[in-house]
Image 1 (tube, one colour):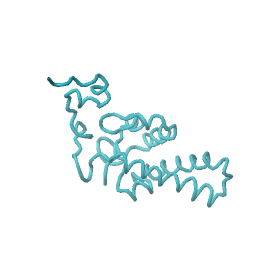
Image 2 (cartoon, one colour):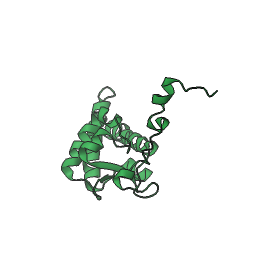
Image 3 (cartoon, one colour):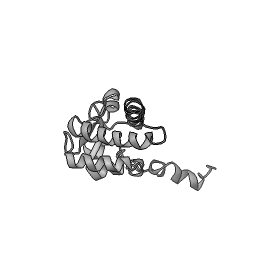
Image 4 (tube, helix red, strand yellow):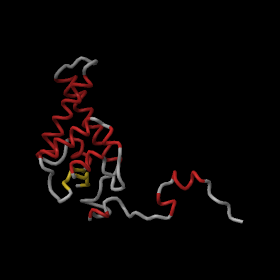
Length: 152
């Protein structure tokens, strides 16, 4: 006799355990499964964020501006926000994103509008919206700005 799965095994494993196939991330947005233009994975995104944070906090905040260690976090956050607004708004990617081969794209293609970059950056700096993702690996900050992070 086959053993019934425990009730926790059906919801902890997500919808796929219940037999629902949702497709790959970005499929419903018309993006390719792999390669250029596909949804950037979590590893690349967190790597780029870490690189940008270190550049803004340590290299610029503490190194160049000489920020006090107690205020270096706030100074770094301000520099981080400025970096995102300027670089994503003009080039579509930050230093960390460029190093790891990803960029921010508008859902319709191309770079997002400057006002949407401002909104996305503000929500990213609040952190919580960026931690809540949908099945296309878009955080609330991406959904609000109608953007997605894709591979170059």
